[in-house]
Amino acid sequence: MKEKIKQMYEGFVHLFFPNLCEGCSRSLVADESVLCLHCKQLLPRTAYHHIPENESAMRLAGRVPYSYGTSFAYFTEKGLLQHLLHGLKYKGKKKTGVFLGTEFARELRTTSWINEIDLIIPIPLHAKKERERGFNQSFVVAAAMGKLLQIPVAENGLLRVRHTESQTQKTRLERLENVSGAFKPNIAIEGKHVLLIDDVLTSGATLEAASLAVLEAGAVGTSFVTIAIAS
Image 1 (tube, one colour):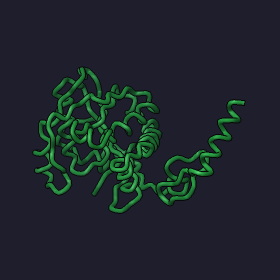
Image 2 (image 1 turned 90 degrees about the vertical axis):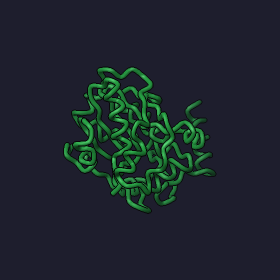
Image 3 (image 1 turned 120 degrees about the vertical axis):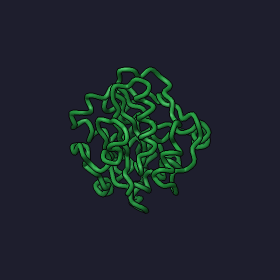
Image 4 (image 1 turned 90 degrees about the horizontal axis):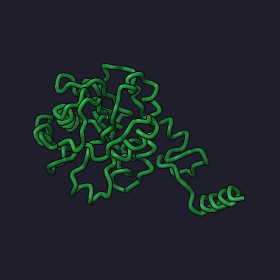
């Protein structure tokens, strides 16, 4: 009886407040979330996770010791992934972060190397920016990934100990100088292989600085993943 009432309620809510696809604005059916099946197939996935020397991994090659690196999809200006990430970051659409994290985790759990990971740490925002936004988008993604992969997630495993300027208009060297020394471990990570998670990979300066902080704190290894890779 309770289940029937629940179904009737959900049907009523969907009738007057339908869930719409973030890609095409059509109504989603029961098994769809965030994107309809058609738009989901349009996501520009990289399929990097089975390729050790992929483009994402090579952006940090020779700059910091790491084991694995990959990105979920390509970030293009005015593309579908940009729309989804902007909705997550600037409109508070956390459901989108859960969707992206879950989709990415489904791909990663088909790899052998994911079993080497002991702990997931999202790249943190500075406390001021997180208060303004209300949440850290990388943690939303990381939490969804950790749940499916059954790997612990340390929300505050790293602290951003100083505010950094926007990386958008900076050169690669300026980006690295901007985030150098910006991170400090907040938990014991000695002997652990840490997977760092960020939303978008550009020059890799942020992940480089975070990886160095983790390794200096005694981690036995670092790997990194991002939802998007930008050109």
